[in-house]
Length: 430
Figure 1 (cartoon, rainbow, N blue to C red):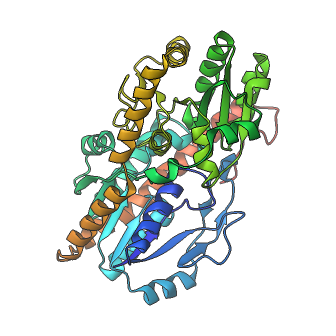
Figure 2 (cartoon, rainbow, N blue to C red):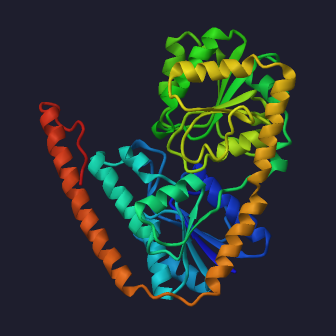
């Protein structure tokens, strides 16, 4: 098959969507399919990319580490014509996602959409963040899904939410898989030595994009509370993002900066070594649809302590491969870490084996098999013409843009009133 992957996030951006697109693309290609990835320009992109079309973008939108794509260049049309695609797979409803819809509609191709993200959790990156804006985002993504021939949900929790929101398109659970064998490699002791972590320390680890929607302030405070109780404990933090300064401030105020160890972005085999340097993986995000880092940690035989949330409860089984916490309190999270630190070796060994067993159920091979089977099913079906629905979609886009602009205007007026006398602060150009 010839497949187009259209995404707002791709390497070298750090995040679940980028890693998911990269993993499926590599596996589809390994099995003999041709995949064209359409993604924004990012800083420090890999050179000499094969079958990747980069489109212009605005970097670091609103202080985030995301890019916002600009109108599509003409060379994209030529690349699509040369590919002769069988499937268009969109990974976002916004920006490039609108282009994916247009390509599928004009060329009468099946359109697949992976609902990677609970988008209402990310409205703080745009002007006018409010309940009304969150409702608009939900309405927009649900309408988009209903224009697709197939929706991939990363977890059962997400599939359930989409059904409740009114998605009528077929929904199948297709999580992003991991390569368990890759995480069985690496040297935890070697990584500890390189990071200056004592050999006999109990290491709490976290890896991922360091951003506000990941609930990292809570996580940092909970880990710091645990470190104050457990003198041999250290915190290994891998990743980058806008929340790093807040985390550093929390540990500095607690006098624990010397037991916080920071790493950047790693590729294999260093990535596996980073995981294997941990005794337990700590995770407090409630905005995930799957939580890929959890299955990666488990593939490295690292139990997980996490808050109960959609996409998390499908992975973490309480006291089987870690702890799943239903109470979001610093005391509960800190106590769960203390519970793990106090386990006898045999009980910790059981948790590690449970983690490895879970990771095998989320292998990339299984996920790829399911994704390709769903593609083939779409190819065998007659194309469904959705001219009326497409016209309604374009009208809805204009309506939502108008509502969005009005909402931004109200927010700007309120901000001007609140900050009168501070010319320029808190304002955003339309």
